[in-house]
Figure 1 (cartoon, rainbow, N blue to C red):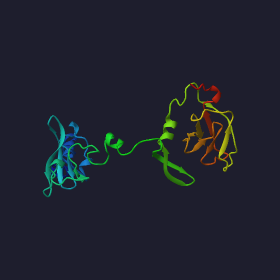
Figure 2 (figure 1 turned 60 degrees about the vertical axis):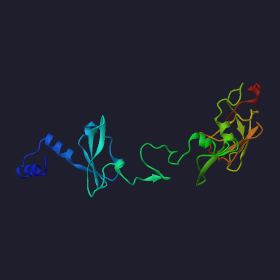
Figure 3 (figure 1 turned 180 degrees about the vertical axis):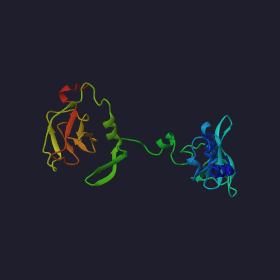
Figure 4 (figure 1 turned 90 degrees about the horizontal axis):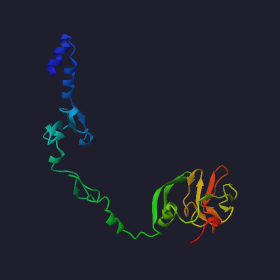
Length: 236
C-alpha cells in the first residue's frame, strides 16, 4: 500500500484491511543512530528497513544461507555496510574489523603474558573489591597469602571447625577478645553481623588464644567466632 492508496482510503472513509496495514508498516523505515542498535536479523523481520545515522539504509534479507542486514540504499553517498567503510575506528592502532580478542587490541594480555608481568608470591597485594564504613568508601585489598588462607577448604586435618565462645567488651573502643579455650592458629573464621571477616585485614589471631579486630565493634554488633579447637586437632 503506497502513499496514494493511503490518501484514497482517507478520502473515501474506507478502513484498510489488516493485511494492507501490515504491508504499509513493514515498508516504514525505522531511524537508529548506530548499527549496534540493529536487532538480530531473522525471518520475521524480512523486508524491514532501518535508516542508520540518517545516511545508510539497511534491509533484512536472506543471504549466504542465513538472514542478514544488507545495504539497501544511502542518503548523501554514505554506505550501509560497516565492512565497506574505508576509515574504520581503531583501538591502540588496531583496526576494528572481524573478530578481535582483547589481547589483540592491547587491552588485556593473554594468561602467559600476565604471568610474566610479576612474580606472584604470598606478599603480593590484590585489590578485590570496595570496602565502606564510617562514611568512607575505599578499595579493599589483601595479600595473596591471606587470601589463600581464607579460601583454604581444609586448612588442617584431624579437626572440625567449631563455634568458640569469647569475651571482651563491645563498647566501640575495645578491639581485643579472648577465646574460651585455645584454637589452632590459621583455622579461625570471624563473622560480624553475618559477614565473614578477612584474617590479617579485618582481624588478627592472638597466639591461638584470642583475636584482635582492626575496628572496634559496638554493642549492637553480632559476632561469631569459629576455629578448630586445639584439643580436637591431632597434629601429624
